[in-house]
Length: 387
Ligand SMILES: NC(=O)C1=CN([C@@H]2O[C@H](COP(=O)(O)OP(=O)(O)OC[C@H]3O[C@@H](n4cnc5c(N)ncnc54)[C@H](OP(=O)(O)O)[C@@H]3O)[C@@H](O)[C@H]2O)C=CC1
Ligand SMILES: CC(=O)[C@@H](O)[C@H](O)COP(=O)(O)O
Ligand SMILES: [Mn+2]
Image 1 (cartoon, rainbow, N blue to C red):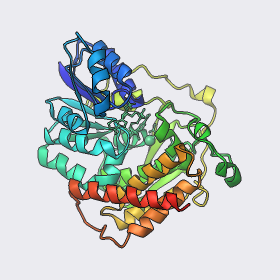
Image 2 (cartoon, rainbow, N blue to C red):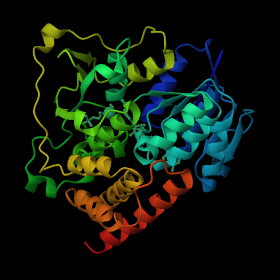
Image 3 (cartoon, rainbow, N blue to C red):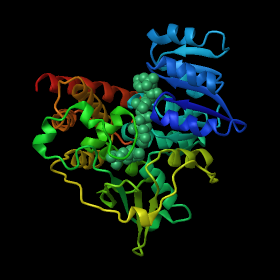
Image 4 (cartoon, helix red, strand yellow):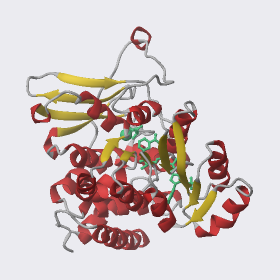
């Protein structure tokens, strides 16, 4: 039996992960499941998958979780520290699917036990790519990408010489507003932004997809995970979301990874790696699909991509600042205090304000990353207050 932990079990990635695990109950034993405020869902999943431990991120949710699991024999705990301790419980495979920078400390703690970390939490790589990869190396742990584009690149590179890579192209659906004008986007509501044309995902990543901040995070994620120079990484709008990434080699060949927009493929690939296993995903009928289309991203309409390139050039703590400012700008948009286009303005102003405060450290420690994250949130909040 492989021992499995799912961090962020109550979310979209967590649900897809447990869907796959639940189909093969004789092969997997669930160690810990963690969630946030959705305590009823966490308790239901913990009971269904016979978890040893269920943890909510919020101490004020502990009584509800305890009540919901009363009589089950499942241990309960609460708080950010308890989630990090859950990640330290011996497990063979840990899914990192908490949304946001909150996923970084438990992800690092999981790596310290030398296990396999299936990494959906792209923010970890954006905030602390060198620290994360160095921690994995030091403890003999494995990081497998789960983000669909990065799983696609990983799969296209199997058996290939990384030194022969000429470029990596990650695709973007273009998000909810890909055919909207700038004026229309200025009036966009959270409900409109949270409606993805192809993928069924959590609210925050779906809105990031509409602003192309998701693709901006993914450019940095590609750079940090694969160690490819930023100028060799491209984003390409592909409205059908069937080709997830392409890797171009020095002989001009391109390896594309194609599949339906269903995260159970990328999750299942990481779960079964290095083997492949049957997965309950649609098989594509190309004659019925007819065509795939592509267009260059509009970097004026979507400043997030330019900002990501500036962050990659600056390195150090810039990724942590970028991500934290983006998280606060998104909170502001959800609360009605920031318009859709203003999210990029908040992130740019935060980066500008903090660029002179010593961000250029090669491999920042976790404490440095958390400090930069906190300062960036405070700076972004001041920018938002002045809008
Ligand atoms: N959804 C997708 O298809 C994809 C997602 N990703 C990445 O995977 C990660 C998860 O995304 P997704 O599943 O969509 O997100 P969801 O919003 O659906 O789920 C997020 C999970 O994190 C928990 N959570 C929220 N805040 C905290 C916190 N402060 N501390 C601990 N746990 C917390 C939530 O708990 P609760 O809901 O109980 O409050 C939930 O379990 C993100 O990093 C995203 O970018 C990458 C590629 C595709
Ligand atoms: C499924 C996945 O990996 C998401 O990150 C996806 O890429 C979002 O779609 P966009 O291409 O619209 O950002
Ligand atoms: Mn993605």
